[in-house]
Figure 1 (cartoon, one colour):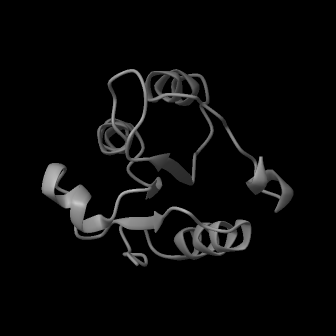
Figure 2 (tube, rainbow, N blue to C red):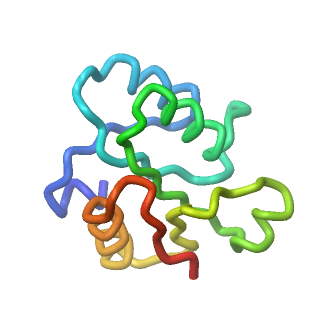
Figure 3 (cartoon, one colour):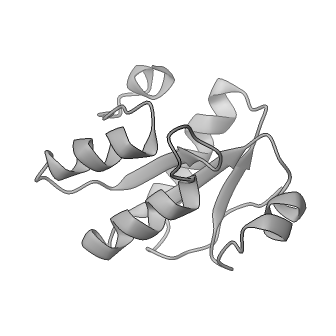
Amino acid sequence: MTLKHFGYHVLEAGSGRQALKVVEEHPEPIDLLLTDMVMPEGISGKDLADMLRDARPDMRVLFTSGYSVELLNRNIALPEDVWFLPKPFTTHKLAHMVRECLNAPVGGRGDVS
């Protein structure tokens, strides 16, 4: 995975349901959830983030999607403090956004462009 190349410890999941299980089995802190807004198995990225933030309020969330923020907001109300990385993105843009998100206070807003 790309973020491992930059020295990050990465927990991987292929769906929201798998992510819930991975987080449940990982007692250590998780600094960041990077999730697509649209995922298989009926749990959206926003739903996943809402569920995980209840249990881990200090975890930052970075959403990504091929859809624009405007289009997503028509169907899913995104919080004002959302971190969002539109697709497509480069490896370096991903790494830069992850670092910005991790350096910001929890709940801090990221680029939405």
